[in-house]
Length: 316
Image 1 (tube, helix red, strand yellow):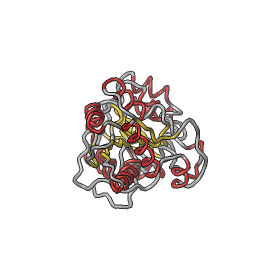
Image 2 (cartoon, rainbow, N blue to C red; image 1 turned 120 degrees about the vertical axis):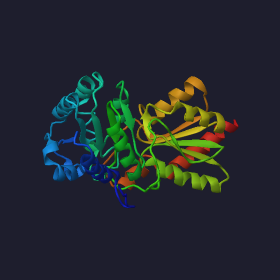
Image 3 (tube, rainbow, N blue to C red; image 1 turned 90 degrees about the vertical axis):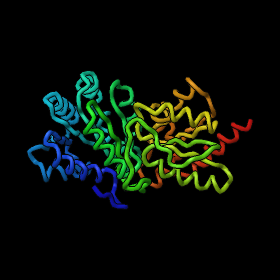
């Protein structure tokens, strides 16, 4: 499908579902009374007999999705990231992860960029929760183009998937020719002095930061790590060895997400100076997305500061 410059990843998801539904009658879609926001309403309109609105009941939705998967269907179940895995973690663990069923959880409104919806709708722990479950493939696309690719890979690959999307429109960091490779990082920009590893909306911020750093004479490598689990250990270690320092950027708590995964790999095999651009041990306030990103240290400027700190530690 064609992705426009102003298409949010969640809209790309909804439209990709329709295309895949035309290609494969085994694809079914479930939602928890949020189809206008998750964009699964596109699928519901064209395939009402294969769409199930489970109401405000994520626990039941996961159980129904598990049953459909056990019956040979390919269920995509969607809600806001704060409600899955949060509200239904036990059902995801018992009904999907343990039996290794072919359920695809695709959540929207991840992170703090839900904006004015406030603290009750901000999901900043979801990656920590879902990555704790054995067998899940966990993906955080950087833009609408990567979202479409990831959704198609999920449909074609057996096993449980968790794909996290945000609410706002995001800049495109890829062109239409991009091909998503599950479990592999993408070198967005080469560099020899320090590596910035980012996911989701922070990939565009990392690229913007690297451009400024280049003007200061610091050559930043930028990696997009769309697959958080299983993580691309080889590319992380290559970056640690060749650049000697890493900055990790994510719209999630510092603990339990991308930063924890990268630190574990680096600490086990090739320790180097690290810096983390993430939400600290706090819940965010309500506000406009750009204001929240600035307040909680998730901007290109914050990445630049982290890069400078890593460079300074390398020189000590």
